[in-house]
Length: 66
Image (cartoon, rainbow, N blue to C red):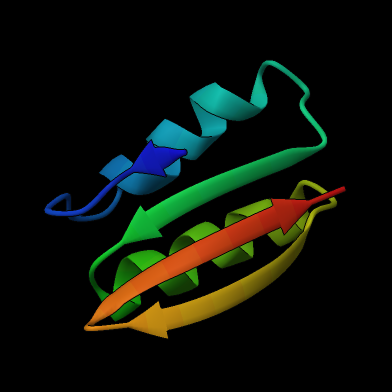
């Protein structure tokens, strides 16, 4: 799991981009702001991943699957 809480964009996107270099079929990232959630979701979808988001206590868990 990638923990991007406390980071502002573009750091979470850079983090997921680096992680995706490993070509895994699934990634999970936790972010704590809407902008990061939207930007990481958009990036992952452009890379061919399906993204599901769950929210709890102001934190978003993004599950990205090929």
